[in-house]
Each structure stands twice: as C-alpha cells, then as structure tokens.
Length: 198
Image 1 (cartoon, one colour):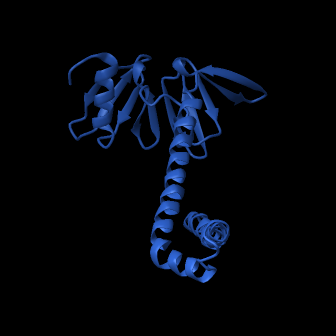
Image 2 (tube, rainbow, N blue to C red; image 1 turned 120 degrees about the horizontal axis):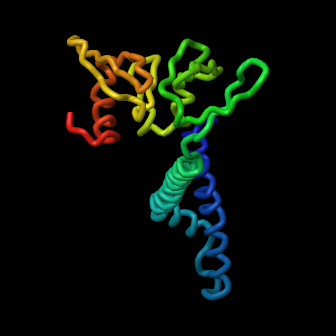
C-alpha cells in the first residue's frame, strides 16, 4: 500500500469508529439522564446529516498534520545526527588507510570508483561521487564538473578559458577544469571562503 493509501486508511478508520461508537454512548446517556427519549436511529441520522463533514475535517487535519510534523522532525534529526565526515577509511590493497578529509585536494569519478587526490598520493575508493559528496561539507567540497569535486580551500587561483570554462590551479599546482555549468556556484563559494570580490 502506498503512502496515499495508508493516509486514507488512517483518516477513514477513526471516522468509522467514531460514527459507530458515538451514537451508542449518546443513547446510554439519554437513557440515564433523559429517560431514553432519543433512540439510536435518531442519533445516527443526526450524526450523518450534521456532523459527518466536521468529523472528516477534524480527523483529516489531525492525520495530515501529524504526518507532516513527523516527516519534518525526522528530516531535522537526520540532518543534525550526520555531521560531515572528518576522515574516510580507504581500502588500499591489503591495508585500510585513514584519510583526513581536510587533506583531500579534489575527488574524481570513473564509475564505479572515485579517486581521492591528496598532495603526494592518490587513493582509489569504491563509492559513487554523489554518495561521498552527501557525506562531506558542501561549503568546502564543491562540484566543478560532472565527474570532479574540489576542496575549495585548496584552490589557489582560477583562469578563464574564454569559452565559459575555467582552469583551477590547486595548491599542489595541479590544474582542474571548472565547467561553465558549475562556475556561478563555485565563484560564490570561492569568494566566501577566500573573502574576495569577484
């Protein structure tokens, strides 16, 4: 059953229970305090003709509001409970190597692997670029190409290719291409990190 079906069940079920139980309760009170002047049929007919839309609105509002609140709370919890990674464990042949995220200059993708580029060494890692980016600080690791992410704190300069693309020079003097598609976001984040006006 999909999400909409479950929501409909959660709304309809309490309405049915309400309409079945309430008249019996009302009749019981009628017999106790009003000498049974109101019978079951009258309560049913009155509830259906006068209160049905009210009951639907109340239960529908409660269920939909609860689902929204629960989802919103879960999203906040997930965001708070998963801070960006500080280190990544990479399997390097026979040994596992702990790589400090701050030492990564950039990450390139060649499906199904990605490569972590450090100043003097590279590590091959079995993961997608999108997956690893979701675990890193998005203010530091910025997409510059569909297959490349750079650590913006390692970028020393960038130069236009005069066609909309740019060449980024990293602190280890390696050049990385910045695609025109990602240029506006890169410039914005670069100016924030390096406190310059572009």
